[in-house]
Image (cartoon, rainbow, N blue to C red):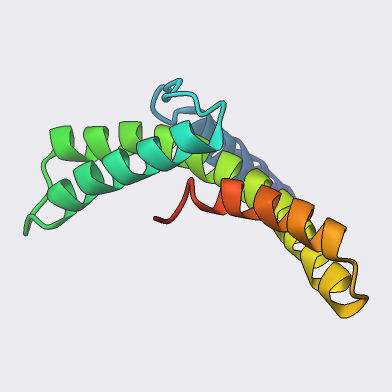
Length: 124
């Protein structure tokens, strides 16, 4: 009888200690907002460059890890916005594709120009 009680108590203690360590994560940062695709691309490029500069070092100090942690918040926001915009971009491109198949020149042109306007914000 002692063995099952000990086992149950051990599992509960382990569970609580795991929960406690998960709640002890470092403070969270706000990160730079990315309200437009242009902002997202700028933030993504700039913060990736900063991340690369840190990660090229052989050993990372606690301060550098802290900086990496901070950079990821802006990168996550930028990626979220880019992904949202790319879903819409893919839908617009599909309209161009279908219009070109069905010889709908007006839709192909209008949606094609809309597609290019967004695409040019990412590539030149």
